[in-house]
Length: 396
Image (tube, rainbow, N blue to C red; front, top):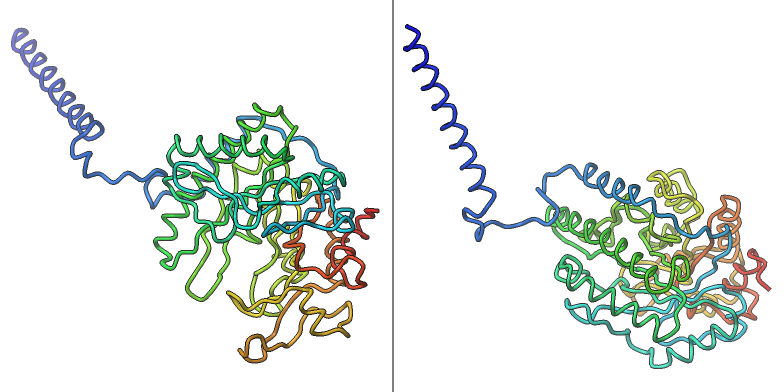
């Protein structure tokens, strides 16, 4: 009987070992190459993965790095975006602390870079800014630039892009970098969700790696690093096109400030209201709810009015020209542009601009930026928006 029990025990152990071996073989085969050529790899995991968990992972990785940016005093940044080689006048320079040259872009997926049209005078503009004690930031991306997984998702290409941007900053003696990575427009909402996850993942990697490269090359805190982000995390640009959203966490820890693009929120009178920035559902409340401190936030002010999408806009200077009796407290006009019919154009008049700046100071925000300086009237004009902003900042 004892021998029989020993034999039975041996048989059971042998059977157990075979089962374990069989299971391990299946697991090994599944993970190491069976049909791997036909397997589509998702760089950010299963498309049904909980996005909250994904973003929590990004936040935890940022927190673990214990990265601390240089403290920037409240109400200390007044930055104007420039396009097409625009060179501010001395009077305009005197009203600003920073200018953002727009745009530097990737030429292809390998990481080569190129400036947008009109910047043959870049050296001249940089020299003029520095002569007036204004810092120069290079802005990368813009609304028409499409980020690809080949550029940002492949490590070699992403690092080559970062290397080229750093070299560009050294060549032109620039004071900072502004990541104006505006996600692409996607018609299909299901497809957009998949792309959003990839965008979120690559955005974080780029921000983190660029900060590291910037600090290594120039020294920690020697160059500013900022990003322009959407007014909120989801916005419709037309009935069928929605912009992919930014990750909520894990990236802003590496930035000196974030610039909220507080415009194009809607059409007509809702284009860029005070409430869309500072209301209970406004962008400041929205982004601070994810942990971004107010000391890292800059609000955006448009120097243009909007009635519809595409070309249905007017520079503020055009509005003043067409309506010379315009008073400071007016933010809406009716106008027929290009024979499209009378439409409502919403904009920010002098009173609203002053109100926004005062509120940003009250909250202790970093400052104000505006898009774009060429849209304003001359600085000597009584209705100049730049002058109205700088007066609130007490910039002499």
